[in-house]
Length: 141
Image 1 (cartoon, helix red, strand yellow):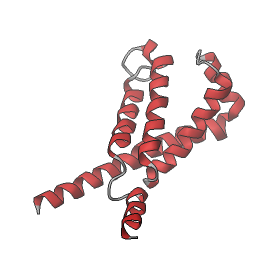
Image 2 (cartoon, rainbow, N blue to C red; image 1 turned 120 degrees about the vertical axis):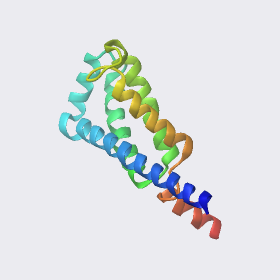
Image 3 (cartoon, helix red, strand yellow; image 1 turned 45 degrees about the vertical axis):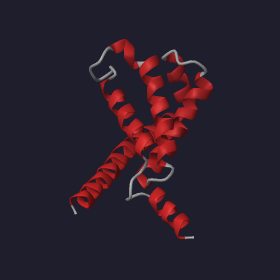
Image 4 (cartoon, rainbow, N blue to C red; image 1 turned 90 degrees about the horizontal axis):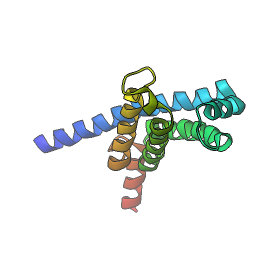
């Protein structure tokens, strides 16, 4: 009985992490795509010295938005988490590391997002996810 309760807490914790991290990424991706626009994101990425800003900037916005929504739903959680972790490694390496650790410009917040995305890439979405629903349908066939 204790083990079942522990598993339930673990799944609830994963759902909480998915929704929080996914919501943050979806909002940042939406901002890049719908507020700044592709030209604005390309210009900003170029100004920060990110290589191939015309490709990397818009691609980052699309991945953040789509993968963020996928995390909230718990759909393709491992793939979404991996893609977002890669984006955060790039953000830390190319932009935030120069400012040190502390917010607002340091690695503090991007590192927390990287850790959350990596946990989800490694663990999957848990029982309260669309991934679990899809898996249960496959096993019942």
